[in-house]
Length: 170
Ligand code: MAN
Image (cartoon, rainbow, N blue to C red):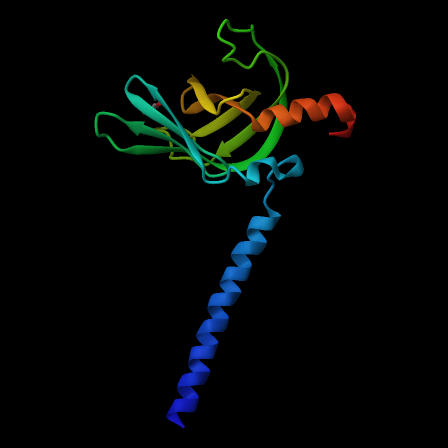
C-alpha cells in the first residue's frame, strides 16, 4: 500500500516537472526571435565592451548589463522585450564600425534597475551588418536611457532580404 502511494506521488511529481518544462518551451516559442528567427541561434550568447569605468554586456534576447570595474557591482540595463525597426541617419565611419544610414533592426531592452529618482533603465540595441560580432559603442543619451551599437552577421541577412523581397513585405 505504501509502495503504491509512493509510486503515485512520484508520478505526480514527474508530471509537475514535465508540465513546467512544457510551459517553459511554450513561452520560448511565443517569444519574438525576429524574421526567420535569426536571433534564436544567438540566444544567451553575450558580447562585451570595455568603456572607462564600466564594462558593458549585451546578452542576445536576454539582458543588458553595466558592470563596474571599481567593484560597485552590476547594474541591469534592461531585459529583452521586442524587435523593432528604425531609421538610422548617421555618418559612415572610416573603420566601418557604425550604423550608417537606412533601416536598422533595434532590439528593445526594458525594465532594468531603477534609476535613482528616475525611471527604470532601458537600452536600445541598434544592429548593423558586420563580418564579426562586436559591441562597438555604448552611450547614455539621457539619464539611464542607453544606446548600444552592435555589428553582427545576423543583421546582414536582413539587409539582403530587404533587397530581395522588397521593403513593404517586412
Ligand atoms: C550609475 C550608472 C549611470 C547612471 C547613474 C544614474 O552611475 O548606472 O549610467 O546615469 O547611475 O544615477
